[in-house]
Length: 353
Image (tube, rainbow, N blue to C red; front, side):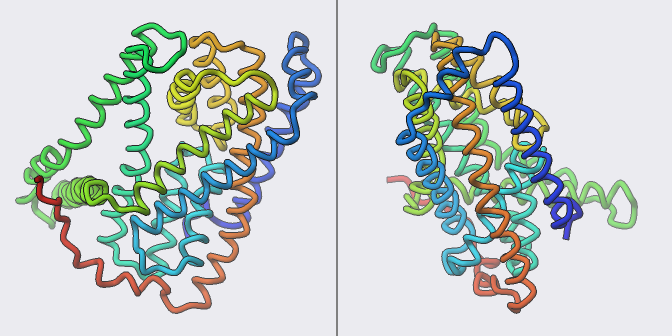
């Protein structure tokens, strides 16, 4: 087991996150200049808070559906739940910008007996399909706001430019398999007996696996896989809904355009290497909403309320799931062997009509 996933270290991470949340709570109650934020949080509507919780649970459900549909639909729902929720807990507790959850999933699937080649290919595919929902939403909503189809205040710099950047990124991802395979071919004649040769062969294998994974993601999306499409969209949409419910609990909900763009751009703060992205994500979200002319006090209170549950719910459900996952892997004899035939699958893109 990777050292960072040892139960003792995860327990320390839980305490760290709890301490950070406590410090933030104390700061909100004690620091001057936050009277409006304190008032909004103190008067938050309990019904909307319940809606935030339910939306976050829906987001977790979307992640689970996308995970099982991408990796192996023959895998039991129990094993799928334990791995998926453990990944979400790792994303909340580890300062890795989301990479910790994927790494935990790779370890768990290998221990469960899933073929290594399948894990590598499908891990890349899973990252691509869950990111695709964000890219497509950013493109559609950004263009809709720029063209005036969706209401909201924002210049071309805040509407058209993010949409174009997202479209360019999606294009690069779509073209990346050919480029990655071309780069990998340069290492085909490497000498396996030398250190540099072994490194080139490892790099070639990584490039090939990444290219195969992107092709697999494209195949899944073009085949209209119900679980992949609905799961990845639900994972994003329910999380956006949770943020919108947070606004409803403490004040006024922004128009759909600024809400979605503020969420998608502000989530980049999660890339800052802090446990659960605490601090970076909140600051980025509030800052981006301010650019879209959302009331800063409303945004600060709503983001804090939303982030409280976005961080704690995956940790609360995922930590017990990780304990059950370890027990399941100890007691069961490689429970993912049912996916063994998938090691031989060939990535095929549906023919265009």
